[in-house]
Length: 366
Image 1 (spheres, rainbow, N blue to C red):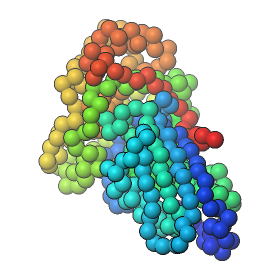
Image 2: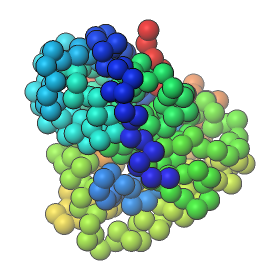
Image 3: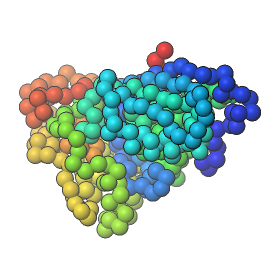
Image 4: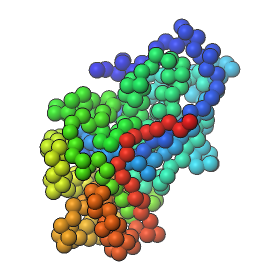
């Protein structure tokens, strides 16, 4: 499959632009937490290794796209961004880059003016993949406009192209359209996997993983010192990059029987190795950098001690930030909640953490 599949039909021939003059769409799209991480990419937003993630539920972005047809057609991309009720000029360059990237696939965008209202249910830029939920929500709104212009767009194509477009804004956004387990990146053992868009994990998954819990310990709510975009770029020429890409491929292969059998001990080992490998790449890049904080490490040590003492299947993972995701089966929720309150919450900024769980993906808000 090639990118040409996602070029929009010539809408001028059916005069669709004269029928769709103004309106709005609202989508709520979740964040996701990668179990096997992708770190490193090539243009245009192609991953250097495949990844798989749990789609979350409570951590989401809600975006409303207001559109109005231009009085006079021009080549400009006209839009405003309102974040949590206030103009957000800081977002403008990234949104403009995104719109220009997708313009070949949705050329009708140049015929409209847009006002983008967006808000998160969690702190922005703190390692909870806000770009994933934000870009996927915007991509879904734009696909709603495409579908109104061209009613022949099927539901399957709608989701596939939304993931394709979202990827061009943020790679991990390709995994936020559907759920609860989504693969992005070609893998020889995953049917229909693609570098161009995310696909729902196609194989048998044990019941224990279908309502898995994710409690996010907010160690640091601030903006990251090094962005993910810069971090991905530093994988070029990294002395350990090729070994890392092979490790991710192998871990995804190993996860297939683990997910099928509900082997939680093997799941814990793979997930924690992936988290530490991700941050090892940061520690050994040039220039090197650290996104973990002292409290991140303290939490990890306490998780290990708790697991040894109790036989719990609780594990941690990390995204590109200081915050710690606690992953565990729902049957352990009461015990883990008590552990968090007693031992872990004090290591979070203002004792703040978010209780979440796996979800089924984005939904349109009517």
